[in-house]
Length: 147
Image (spheres, rainbow, N blue to C red):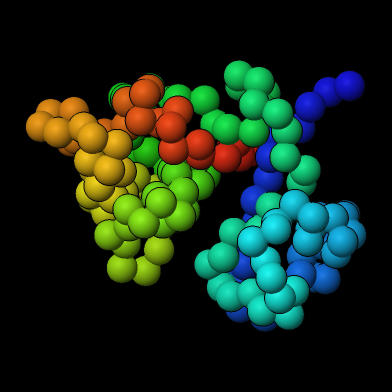
């Protein structure tokens, strides 16, 4: 059986969980099962991440977490859903300096937020420059997303 990558949906204004479930061809009960952090199904907000596919066991590139894309990936010219997913994980870890939330383009706010994450892990100096390395990336558990 082929594994699918974990998918997250970012809530937009006017969304509700029933609508999100329909868009992703799953049930409301499945959405609630995959998102135990949602205590009140009638209370979601724009910008919130909602898991819309079942979590998979971590298994390299086919697992639940995005594989480390390499330090050269993190440059101003790069736009990828992996960067946005990373930003939401940094918010989850209280390492955000975003003013309006992350997006898919690598930015100075991403680098500053990632530097906070690196310092939280105990890195310092050049090891806390805000450019992801394999060790800090693997500890962040960025969800795998479709490119």
